[in-house]
Image (tube, rainbow, N blue to C red; front, side, top):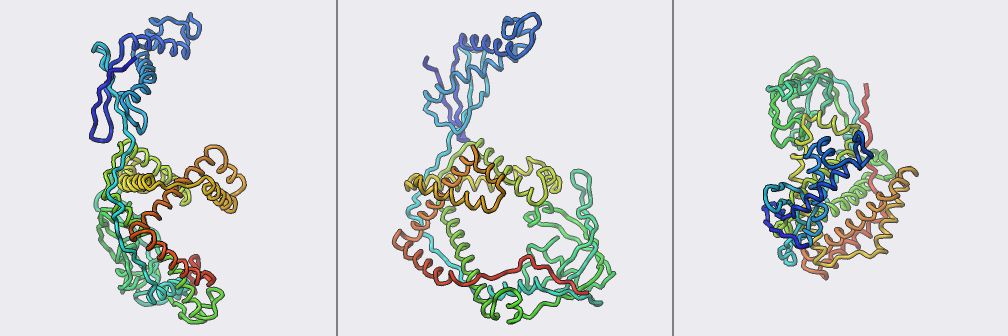
Length: 481
């Protein structure tokens, strides 16, 4: 049977199919639906599945039979509908409307289309690669940070000044109540605050940039009230746009005495002969970090250029799916912080829909980049051999065994979990090789790129045997009374 189908392309990369269905086919589907329903329910006086149509219709209603009948018809015609229409669907279609008043009945079905990417002339993309050199200021910054971590606190009876640790009792009230009528923004509690130097970047300071310097000149026991309106792009998402007053009372002030950045300080951090050895180690670590960051930034700039020059289309359902996947991935991250999703939403005073709306733009950008990279890999014929995948998976399995318990490893390497590991590994390797190809293109071709990679490899080899800086990130500040 050939279906009579009309197609209408929609603006959101979907297509509406209007298909005529024989009245007899719908009638047969209703009878089949009634038999299926009869097999699932108890009908007094009849064995399961043996009650006649009119009895089933009276018990469950014609709407229930009709709904199941439509599903039966759709299951029967949908595969053939796609084949005859030549449609490449991204996912299942949606039955939007049934015109039973027409003869024959007409179905309207909305079908999301597979994504398409029309690349621009990515082969002509040229972007200079810029490496970030390690400066003396960078090295000194690390040393200063290490000194900060080793600071000794000494109580003082004077006004607070730059560099002090000031302990305050603090609370904050919203000028306008939130949607629940709550005015308390921060409940009163004791907070330690380091009074930052004027030259320090305070953009990430809590509760807002410049807060600590408002404490300068205060003595223990003194109080102060501050007003602040958080910017719409504040680093702290749950405070964005809030206007509030802060009530502060200074409990105590402690001078922070930092150790001298000398040979003795270097020796206290690890197996360093002197300060010069520590500085050399820091330089090696920073060089490695900067090289990786430069490479990541370079790849990002290339991909952004290729995406900007491409025409990318995908249905809204695909973006919805990616948003859901992103939210699911938040679960384990929140668990590491001792939170579940409900608690997270409550602390931020937002709904799940608010969260989805918030992450949608970034997820959309990520989706565009992913689709673009995969299309480049297709056009460049980027492939990964089965042997290469096996070796990569084996390496991951080995790392997994080293980092997790035997039971967790077993769960991660069975059934669908193992298939997912293989699939992710293959996808990531294809992406890595595609990015390498794009770097090669953007630097002017294979020969030039290989020459630069060789120079980097030689430079890295020269520093491989040098020790790495032992940065005591977890070192606690010493509090000397």
